[in-house]
Length: 114
Image 1 (cartoon, rainbow, N blue to C red):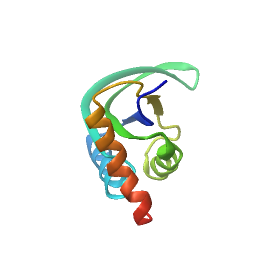
Image 2 (cartoon, rainbow, N blue to C red; image 1 turned 60 degrees about the horizontal axis):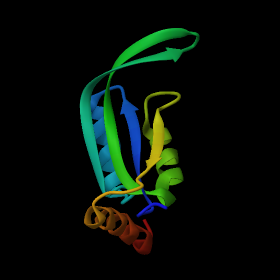
Image 3 (cartoon, one colour; image 1 turned 180 degrees about the horizontal axis):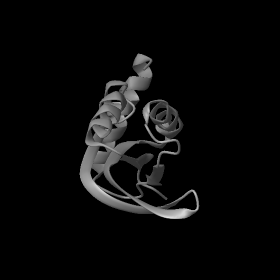
C-alpha cells in the first residue's frame, strides 16, 4: 500500500521556453507543488509509421493523483504537440515530510477554489 496519494508526471516539450511556460501555469494554478525541468534530452520514438527523433526538455511534476486529469487537460490546451507525452507514475514510498509538503501545497489550492 502506498505511503501517499502523490504522483510524478513526466511531460516532454519541444523547447525550453515551452517547458517553462507549462511549469509556470501548473504552479500558478496550484496543480503542482514542484516542477523540475531537465533540458536537452534526446528522444527517439515512432511517429506516423517511422522512427523519429527530437531534442526535448523533460518536466518532472510532483502533485497529487486527484489532479492528474486536470493537469492533462491543461497541458493539452497549451502544448505545441498534437499528442503530448503526459504520463503519471505513483509514488509508493519516499521522504514522508516531502510527500506531505507536496500534498499540502496542492491541497490548499483546492480549498481556495483554484
